[in-house]
Image (tube, rainbow, N blue to C red):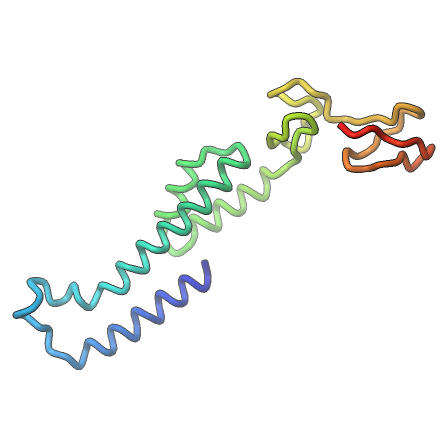
Length: 146
């Protein structure tokens, strides 16, 4: 996004500088000043497409409202909408359910989607274990995959 913003600003600056030495071409264009703004309009369209697609896909994957966050990220000016989305996304990021894979908050002990308990225990010593561990660190018992 930063590269896209810098490229757009640079392109607009260069294009505007190049167009300032030329006549406005009134016989070619009905709106001569629109010619000067074309790179900015093009960069805005690319920005809306790229940011909109990325935010929409990411928000949907995280269980957030994708259309709301896409609108905020794209249309709040000066990349403030993108920053707001990234802050909210980072705070809302928790864990994935060990059974269905849907996004959950960190403090959820049971998945509201499938009802699976999010605490895994060793079958041998009943110590809490992580979902990606292969062996219990307390007793050495092999853990079964979920």
